[in-house]
Image (cartoon, rainbow, N blue to C red; front, side, top):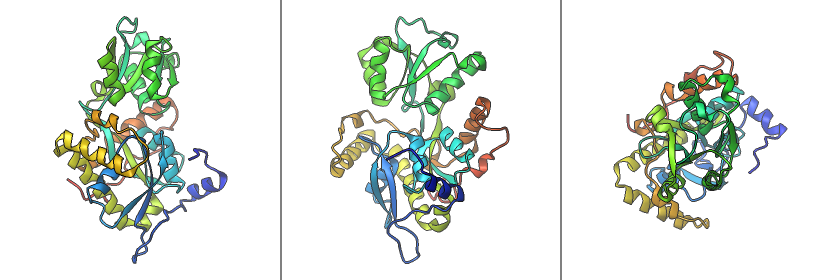
Length: 331
């Protein structure tokens, strides 16, 4: 799916005229939600559907994405009915007058689900100051990994004027470890299965992790357009509450049972995916019960983007960016 928004789509976005399309109901609300998945992964909505929490609402998979910013842009322009991304990307899109609202947190950072900034065992890089002049490989620029890097630099006394001397390179996640071991980069951002496999091989050490930096926090939210929420409040409530229940189910169910369920989902949907990486699943990392959103989870990125000069001070009011009103999950 193209990430380029054509002129017509942009005009629709700016005017807030895009609404989801799909199978309707007697109430006039759509009962089909179009979405993008992630290859080899089971998202909270997909888990919710398999657990039967969606009731008469069904999901329609339209393809996979490899980028949160692309996913929420597709939601904003009506190509899908919901999309998810790092909260900094959500804030940035909203700052451009995209008519979107965050409705539930769906991933985050905890002691089991985190990303680390790894260097070789004998690397000269041992502090934030050592990153000046270094190359750091990450999956996407302007998103979670870069935000964590900036936060680490700032908290450890590196001046903002020197941030630009830390070279950030976008690399496919599957190639990042290799780039580190071959000396093409000095720091590799690794998470999940890629982190665990790299650590098993050995020869690397963490400079820091996002969990050490900020503790447990929800890092990304699903968004829908304001028009969709207005036209489909009941469908939205069913969807958000189902996702909340699925997140809570994953917390309270033994890990091996969650993994087995996810593998069964991948097998049944027959998208020619490798289910092996699911063995390394540990947590969605969502901080709050039911994925309820808190001001601080967006405010930290409003502050980050303001400090970067991407937002004017006071340009956004955090409470206008999200709503928990559709979340009937755990309070």
